[in-house]
Image (tube, rainbow, N blue to C red):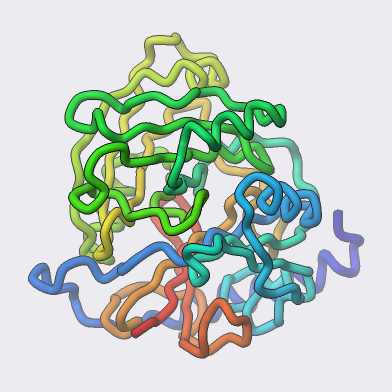
Length: 334
């Protein structure tokens, strides 16, 4: 935890960032439905963890992810996130071999109170496309990885899609998915390495309609179907009846397979414990590629700015908050 001097400095910086946020509203044009989704694809999942090295080793061992960059969070980048307390924190930028411009960014923040990503608001899960799910399952099971849903078909119209669920660093649910049918005709992206890129991220919030409306109205994302699912492991964690039906829906971005899975999280779900001035722990932020930041009408934390990390390729980025308080970073790309 921070000492009093650091706490006061971060508190002042956070207050200044809040003033900037309220004073600055990006005046983009109202999305035109004919333009399609303004979000092109998922670019970065930023994981805030007190143990960067262990998290980095986990992805290298099980996903064969490699490191592009080891550095420290610049002040300008931390302020763009509205998280000035992340200034100077070490981070690593990693990716698969197949998709070298879709990253996981592992930032070493301070330890928070214990929490469960599945029972708290914000970004909660990551899903990856894989080439050979059965081989990956055998490897991870033999290595003692906590797999709580073994490979199985999704059934129905998605019968050719098989997936498994496992527990990753920071108790983040990782879904590994494969298309066993015609990959060219599938809604899923095609894997270019054994464990390739993220193609779906999950967010939890107290109001599913508000979550969906935010992404549809702000980013012109396409609505997917609504589902009511029993999720026994989640019901158990929340001390709800095992047959409780959890509501979820999907919204889709422009590029094939890039999807957000939005979850309605009833009580006793609640906010994630977050240190003032830092990113939320676990998946603290998700970044998306957009064609033109100025085409988006949103209240940004700070004006768009070009950041130094290789993650941005010299293009401007900006951050805003979603309906459940989740941090959303937009990166302009051709």
